[in-house]
Amino acid sequence: MRLRLIGLIVVVISLPLSLSIRSVARADEADIETTLVDEKATVDKDKQLHLDASARINAPADKVYDALTHPEKVAKYDSRITDVKVVSHDANGKTVEYKGQTLPMPNAPPSFRVQYSFDPTTKSVSAKNAGKSPIQFQNHTELKPSKDGKGTDIHYTRVSSSTGPIMGFEPTEGMRTQFALDAFMRQMHDVGMYIQKGGK
Image (cartoon, rainbow, N blue to C red):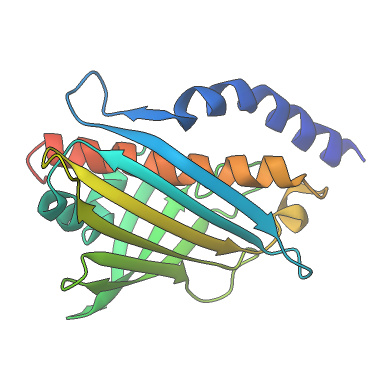
């Protein structure tokens, strides 16, 4: 009961901060930012969250795609990650292991592996959890140059299992949607940092 209460308190405290980065994720005080355009989410009978989001980043699609294909470098801009390494890789993708606060929630596992697949023809990246994990997820990010030619339109989809077993209580659909959106927007913030620093 105490664990559930602590988890709920952390969620409630973190929501104002989450809401502040939900619509716009800034790359420090830089020129590159991501704006959330639209999102919708549903939960199916198996308690899986289905998120569909659209966003725009004011950076060229080629540079955004390059960033997404180097998640181990992009992760260096996430202060919650203490260590990251490429476990395996081939021409079509790679598996990356993250250590630290691997998920934006209480009781997150200390390490987490993600398997990425890349498609340069459609400028899309797919990711899913690799190996044993308390949370199962798969997401897909597709990029297209914006109509004004000044940025990149992003279509992001995610399907993920319930975070209840980790948090100690079953979060509402709204909480789960917020966690998923925060993860996406934080990733795009780090993508912006990677691009701004010249792909380093």
